Length: 310
Image (cartoon, rainbow, N blue to C red):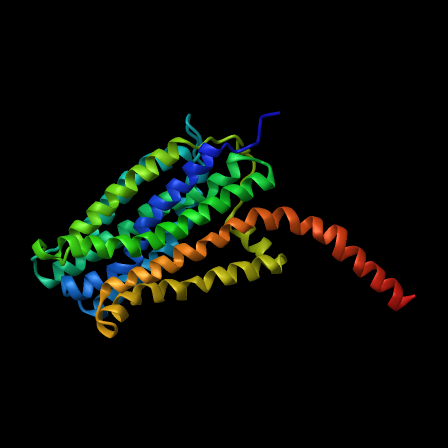
């Protein structure tokens, strides 16, 4: 039987890829709306329309991309090739999204729409393999829990890191920049993110070979969702994350216009990085809770039932 233990270098690679990918996610999520409205001069209504169209397209596009990717297999693995190649596209389109344009307003809006929607599609090409990778790195639940833990830690550090690093970069380039340092800052941040993703992806190994006969349709997914209420609750909690993303995009406006210092956004990033340390508890909980339930809670419930209903 193939060794199912995930090596430390693979966990480090998974963590590295998460940080790099989410430097892009944190940058776009926290700063793109401010860039559109206060630097490019796009109206809030036009920016909101871009976001609305992008979200509708994501709802259609993401399942199609994920379904198509599931049908392909490569010599290097099912997901690793995407994680080795797509980072270059992420770094490129993220940098292009923050370019300052001295063009008619209609052209600016069109450029912003194309680059933002392209960013969302390319990010999907990276994010789907990234989160699926843990399922093919090992068949052991505890090993998978370790992988997901380091991935979540990297995600939070990447998002928080963008809020910490990017304001410093914009301050560095602001004096000589037509975009208040946003264009140069985005390029520098992506030059940090790109090697983190590529080097990270090169360290991971796919051990579990997917069964080509195991095909799950969208209809199957909804059938499972109807039958599995706890899963529905978990997905509902993930849906609430949309409000967190909305608040993240508004922080920059609050700190700029209410607090008078956009650099204070780094405080939110620091808080995010600090709280992400809670992710380290996941492997402990997944290993200890089942044992605790079996040895402590379940016997106690049985004793209680015998005492009350005999």
